[in-house]
Amino acid sequence: MPLYPLYKDFVKFLNTLPRKEDPWESYQRYYLQPHRDFLLAYWSHFKWMDLEQVKQRVRRIRRGDYCCLETPPGGRPPEQIAQQTLRRCQQIVVTPAEPDLYLFVGFFSADAFLMPFKGKPVIGVGLERFKDLSSLEIMLAHEYCHWLRRCKIGDRPPTLGNKLLSEGLAGVFSQLAFPDRPMHKYLFLSPERVSWCRENLPALLELVQPELDSARLTGLFFKKGNSEIPPRTGNYLGYRLITEYMTRCGRQNIEELIQTENIRDLLRQTPEMT
Image (cartoon, rainbow, N blue to C red; front, top):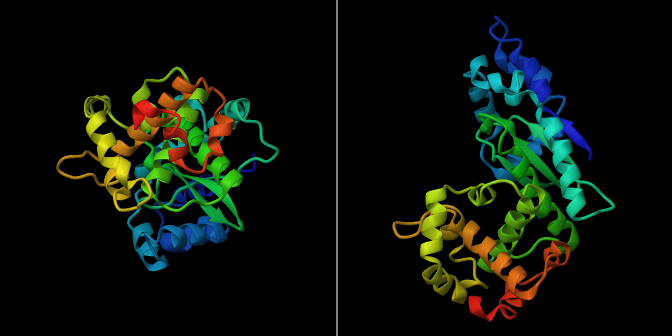
């Protein structure tokens, strides 16, 4: 796997603090300039910060805010975790290519994500989000599944059905890679949230069925929620739809499912979920 541990140069910048030199100058020299293409592509893709905002944030940095980067919790550096995770993922689905993986430090980054860079999808991990690295394996396996799907069928319209399918597959894939974890870990939910979803599954299914071809409720189920539906309940719904299908149809090979283009194709074969 082409692995780019950009965070190591961020640590070089941290080692210049505190000094009389402007932190922005050090940041540019040790971190921004060597990795300018990726960082600018990242900030442009997610549209969270521009360079002026980055500059102001850099000047407020305290070295102690990033101590886990200098001494990784558990003694395993993130690149070692990434390499071991890749080996597990390749045991599930063998591919001729491998994803490019960028371990970096942004500001308010996503934990892990997929984005286009230099004409292909790459995986990024914003390490400043991790207080420890215990969840990194599952997140990387989750994004690996998204990368596989993107490579095999390309981008899909941002409908609720496509999001449920994509996130459900990624949850199941990460469980196959690391089968010894509690279920809620694969869904990035609390145990209490999973219990709520399980208890309210019939009502949730009734709500999503007419909206599968629309993007109107995607934000509701995968981001903000509302006063009646907690955030990210779509993670549970997608996972249940995939696992129910695999159980009832006797399908255990997720490689074929990753290439499924429409969640209705699965629902038609799983009438109990319709």
